[in-house]
Image 1 (cartoon, rainbow, N blue to C red):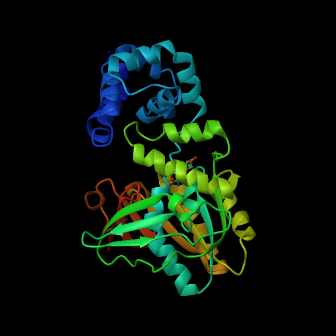
Image 2 (cartoon, protein in one colour; image 1 turned 30 degrees about the vertical axis):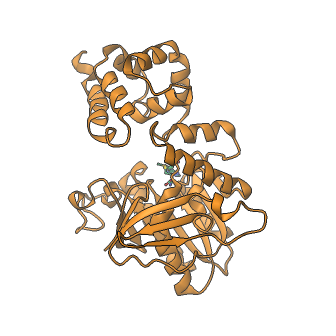
Length: 344
Ligand SMILES: C[S@@+](CC[C@H](N)C(=O)[O-])C[C@H]1O[C@@H](n2cnc3c(N)ncnc32)[C@H](O)[C@@H]1O
């Protein structure tokens, strides 16, 4: 392997060493295999830089049917199907849609609905397929180590019975303000550069491929969330969140409390785009009484001048977890898939 491709190989080696092992021994082995494979690294380096990330090629291979196999067989699969792998990598992006993140959002959504006494209108920016727009349709189990608080959706005509809803499980710490019931949502909409369509089998297969091979529970959760969203698909607008937010907010019913939220999206924006977004949120709050929930990793905290939005919240405190801000105030630290919630 020449010095020229050390960057890409390091990316795969880091992914295989630090990111993958706890969740996917298979991805760890494949990623380390690619890191030491000069032929594959040089093929990957023919793609644009933003297409070289490990998760994209691994998901593309899974999308095309790669099973959980030792690296040697995986390599044969990649080389035999390289044209198709390239086509998928170049036409798709990592748009994992994790309904589990609703466990993080739910206490704040319920508190906002309770404080305004009105039902909610939701806008998710960077919504992918919009599965986080159904927090009122999922079942929840919050476990504080001693007892479990269960919340189930209200029966709703022709919708799937409550027992078919995904059960979103979350280990809680601190005084999480768990609601007695799920908040009422009367309108839901999302914005995404490339909305995925839960009624398009190719998009659904891509969402499944983005889940790591051994994580069957997440695939089951995804399928159940998709079945719920398919009953009443959310309005999803294609475009940049900074360009679409104000006009979409204008469509929300005026008698509902508007909440704009996002999870795992701000890392895709540069600091000035994030600043523009915060300015729009400020305007919507002043003119429309809009509330704002931000559920993001540490990158969201960086501003254009290098300072951070929440100075006390450094990387070591977050350690790969997300920070939940409610109307700009840090309220909780959450597992990236909603598996834990520590109230501050
Ligand atoms: C990692 S996914 C997260 C999806 C969803 N929020 C969730 O938590 O499951 C990030 C999404 O943000 C979208 N995105 C990135 N930049 C965007 C922008 N400037 N405007 C709109 N959507 C954007 C991507 O297309 C992708 O679907």
